[in-house]
Length: 120
Image 1 (cartoon, helix red, strand yellow):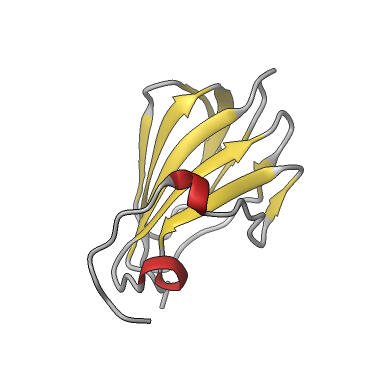
Image 2 (cartoon, one colour):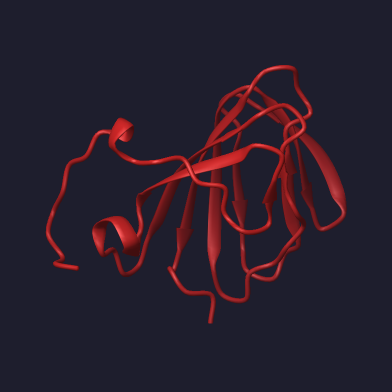
């Protein structure tokens, strides 16, 4: 894919249920190697329906930021569970087991930024 600056509307990107995501845990890969040929950054918007979740997992070298835009959920980080809601921002360094689930009654909408792209 040719690496160029780009502008795209969120409506142009399909919702996907990535591996390890369940029950209507959908994401749009807005900036990703498959959509923009980015090499350092994965930027997604996610919408988890009530009861949807991503299984607990860790990253070897990747850092992540979650920014909650709407709804309420439960974030588990290193065995500790914390309620997250609108305007909460979560930073996850590599090697920390984590997962998020929608425990609310409405959709949980959040941005996830991951860098680098590969977890090697």
